Image 1: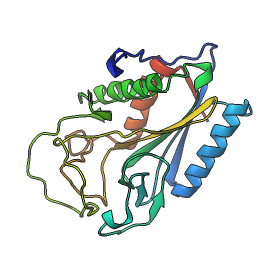
Image 2 (image 1 turned 120 degrees about the vertical axis):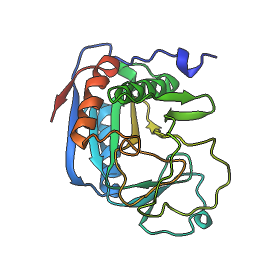
Image 3 (image 1 turned 60 degrees about the vertical axis):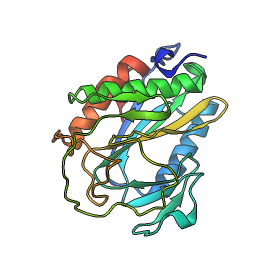
Length: 237
């Protein structure tokens, strides 16, 4: 079986087309975003709508993955939303760029592992635009970077949970989650630019924590520039 590194990192459509690129200002409620993504993925699957990349921020909240147990979140400071993704509890909030990726895999490559590999390659390229080296971990999905060891004062407390496994070390994780439907795949990832409410935890970092004082517009520009070679050209909507 091919490794993630050996899978083709490009997912260009077989027929040339433009992917819609949308950036929302302000904070988008989680339930509204998920409802829109699911409806759009269904429309893409039937050919009623085109492919879309949607960049946004959520208000402070937690999502509970399929492995989350209610008793694991010891201090729910923000609303909790159940999610169909894998994993446990994840914080989302201002300063974190969420990208909802809605692409027609049947027009590209229906191999889901290759799709995830392509998302990872995209994020590694975007990080490189800020001179940050992203890497894959053989036992985990996502893109990680080493965080320089330093003492960090907490601006706020991270979510308190009962951990059921240890973390391998300081790293920045981009955790994709997907929903594949016969023709369309909906995927999302989060990119931490500067987290305001989450504070600091040894397993989470951000561009600002890494010394990259980039604005959200610069993050968006890097994501769009590095998207094209892997997935195709975009048009702003």
